[in-house]
Image 1 (cartoon, rainbow, N blue to C red):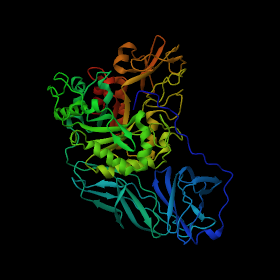
Image 2: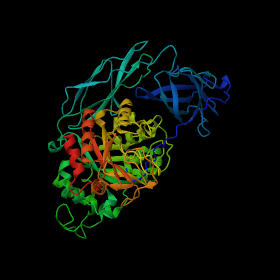
Image 3: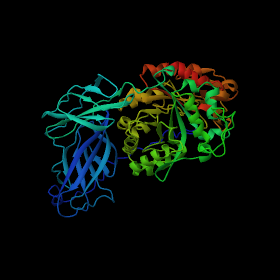
Image 4: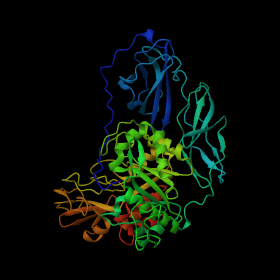
Length: 608
């Protein structure tokens, strides 16, 4: 979410060697003294997350463990954590790490992995013997996924859910009903009425079948339900989310303040603001620039209220200006966004203790000085289990665990959202984390469908940084909005939880000799604050658009080549977002717009 190179190709997939398998322990140290149990913890149709748990059931310490199993053709492990996983054909072997091989009597350890395909493991062995008590039994398959629930009878506090039955070779015993990823009921029928809900609140429901052997099958598709009542979005702005990022540092060189949202007319056309960015230090949320956030004094002509700050008032700065903005526009909700390109390195430590991280974030947001300012929290982790400014190796489940802890800590009264990668390339960043499973805990995703291409590739080829669709000659497959949205939907993210991203800036090259995309260049074009990047409000007159490609405008002037969104291309993108059933759109960031808010107006009218 920062003006910079987004490190396009980022994610390095775990390599799974197919040779040199380790030797197995003797059968004497096998199933009689330990068990291995498998569980499929998430399923998003084309893939899944699995977990093996090894338990020492004997009376002597195990010094090592090796789990083996077979998958049918077409099912495989794509990445793993907390074990070294290898394969030979369809036979898979997992061996303990150096730090988790020793198991005292009664102790257990788990390792996890992401898989492709839909098959179940069979022929399990632990240290050369039977896994003895594991849930995988070649003669007893796990049940299928139930049908995606449908909702009816929605009230302020309840909803009725119905779904089609799952199948199983030995029979289905019951169904677990999950609300926002947490089990709320177990029923023997294919319907359930959930009660005690909060008015005007969004919930996500899935269902999971359990067979007579107590094996659980894959989770169904998710249905999003919003209870009635509770106010909701201001009818004057429509039902779609229209969210903009406000940068903390913009009050300095950019001279952009909260009052500019009022004078530009943008405040009356948005529903949400993400305040960027809080930092993540020592595994905790912290305020970054305290002067800009709550100490900077505003004169009467600079403030939203028209009243000057005093030296002794309890709260000044951006936080107080946001408070004044909300008083003037009660429909606007404000979220505090933590992380971003520069501060994402702190998430790895946060992921090691998600509960402590979540508690620290709530403490910041509920600080008594500004507890009425923020309506939720936004996490901008660039990128879980992949590379951005730094590389993360927290594992595919880390992001889901982190947002689950946030939802548990903040409850249903707060908004909990996340800005995520839009890299839909095969094996790219969307494949690196469990975005499908994590979506159950979030109100929506801000999908960063921009910064696909730019002058970090100094010689080009020139390409639009925010293509809506692919086009002939695009430099990399999967680097466009449509592919990103489609991939996230395929992983189980409801359309209503996806916001399309718009950049209020352009990216450009110089030394270009052709107007059409795909030309060569000599380096980044000159920008006001950074080479290769410029605000829309400057480009609209300095280098007007000369064409469109992939649903985004481009401009060729002199030897410079720029790509950026205009009110017209934003209109096209908003129509596309509505046709896709998306929850709305967001943009980075307010100060790049014209003084009369042309781009915000285009988003508002396009979604209304």
